Length: 202
Image (cartoon, rainbow, N blue to C red; front, side, top):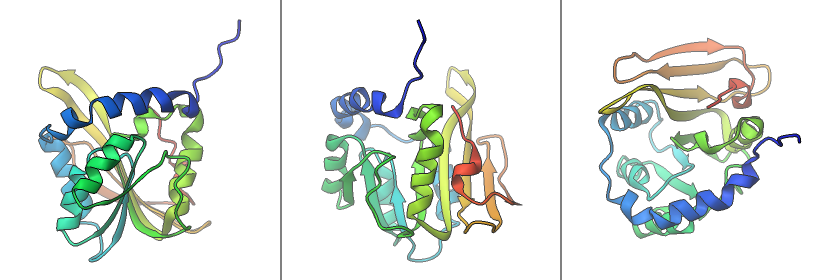
């Protein structure tokens, strides 16, 4: 018997049901300090008045923060209940999965993805990253944050996040990575032509 690889389409229904059921509980949670620090670091790299897409937005806690910082925010989430929480907070929000971001090409200055792309099976990750790249304008900023490091009684010891400047084919791409709470943040230039070339895996 041959094991078929798990695909993104296979996880959508159980993910939606799980997040629908726990939306109110998750909305009441207080964000961990490392998430706040990552969010602030991302915010500090945004140009004034930037148009921001948050994917896997959950109940809109980060979206509210970015709106209060005078950015234009559009949120998406797989869960209709999560999207209703976003809308109740005054955020423009849509029910969408990562492969079907129904926006015009290049319509966002930045994309924020905190702890959501870990749900994408590795086989589908290049297509998801390409879909994200498509909605970013050239030179736009892409942030992805995931848990990392060793577990402790206090939770993850460290996380890894990457902010990536989208580029046109053949142009260099800027890359920012950090490993809080004990790491540092740095910017480097790489020859990669698109966000899909980052090769993120989980």
